Image 1 (cartoon, rainbow over the protein chains, first blue to last red):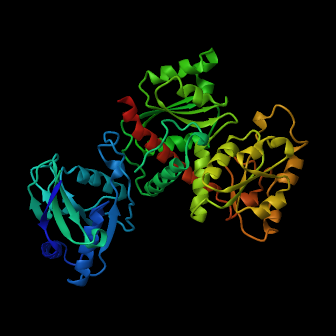
Image 2 (cartoon, chains in turn yellow, blue):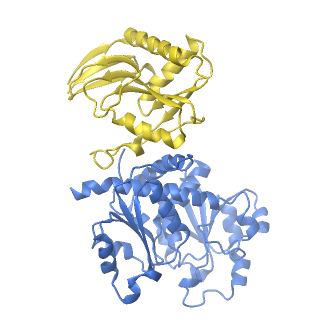
Image 3 (cartoon, each protein chain N blue to C red):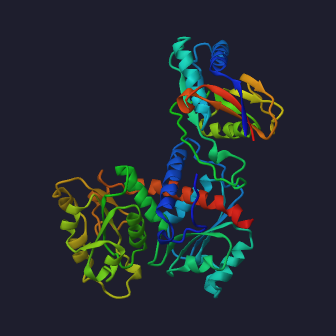
Length: 179
Length: 312
């Protein structure tokens, strides 16, 4: 197994700032917008973006929820390993809000498909956008594309892209892992 | 995530502590799901479940059916009163006929102890015991322990009292297994005639005085007197039973602490528990019912996740 650094901490930081600015361009004060981090790994990115928007760009009162998609996946009973559910926590109304899904890596698009179904249990959003830190293009199984992307990556199927966050993994970095 | 060690849920006796904790953790997620505005997830949409109730039930049957529907499973219902059993068909034949209609899981209540175990040896579908005679009622015990865990954060070390008809109660037996596996202290209380002779071999203690038992416990689980299973007279009159083992406000107020009151239902108000106790804030009877749906969703989900692998 070999691994290559795709983005180091500085590059991650630059991309985060750019994503925050792009969000502000489209959502202004976030009064009608909510962020939804997709469990399990999207929540670190979502929390980071929220923090950045609040501290560096003085956007106040951003609502952030976590959405677990385990029970909505299309591979139940088709996997060797059972999938562990995480917590869903959306303590605000999403009806008629602009929802931004936040996830770390967009690969086949199946997680986002599940998230699109899952979010409907909480109401009918006005619109849904997708922010993803890494977009693995050419590997999609479904017609799903991000509205905001940190970096586009071309990786072949037996390679894995891992996004590490300071809070969880000790440092900010993106790796390409070759099995 | 680890998975259940069993293919069927036939009784608490056959599962281990890790299984119970896994069911609880999964139920936590489903409890959040059933409190959403849309209380449904698509996990089991390709699974068909038969609810075979050879014995009457309201709560358990509704609870299972809701759990199944909230997981998007297809459900077929069967009740003994309107079936061919009356025409002399055997249990295996009835179930095999239902299974040839491509049913993946069976939820069964039967008046014979061990009916689920017997069936599990003859059919391929995953079986969930929803009560077999005076033997076990595993999902009830799971939801009882889950409700205790919800109140106190954990079950281990808590003093749990089970009052009433221990002899005929599958709820009592399953509860004793579950509580002991989770590390709780269990005491049973009731008329001597309704306490099985060797009950202490399960690791529980016996107390015949309700007041003393209540002073010891953190939680009192009040069982119903199962008149339908009594072929002889176990106590002189219902009135005498109520005087000695019925829980009323007066005895509850005389305790120097607030205990939690549970009841698996159906309640015989004025017999094992008075109305003012059943409706007071210490009683978590309706929480138990709500938790029942989450627990049954967790059991169905976890057993269904093992289905595919068994077929391969």
